Length: 167
Image (cartoon, rainbow, N blue to C red):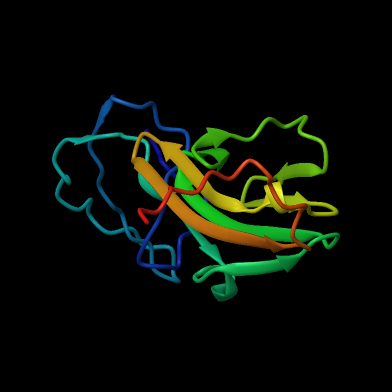
């Protein structure tokens, strides 16, 4: 069976449409500019078609490597470009729990290569330990992001108990 019906000028060729786990053998026949064909090359031997697997990975702006500080009332955005084959599942966590996509003021937008977590009009409780988790058959990648929201201090707590001194 012919793998390509067009002339291939390069020294490499990617063949699409193979069935996974089927065994194939390949040979090459060269044709020069005059149209003369070569004898077929020796067989490659048996090759089993497999889907390409690539562990997930992501890149974030370097400003997220350290503590990210945001003032209360501001919005912040964590933007990540990611890769992996097959495409990884994208999960955003905050303080160890998956972020609910219906959480007010938090929005997650994910495309085939990018995911953006936006937190609008931050308050102190929006700070914490965020994790971008990417999962596919090639593995799991977890990228931590620490965010601190600066706000005016709340009212003092009057329920302090102080140890009695001896005297």
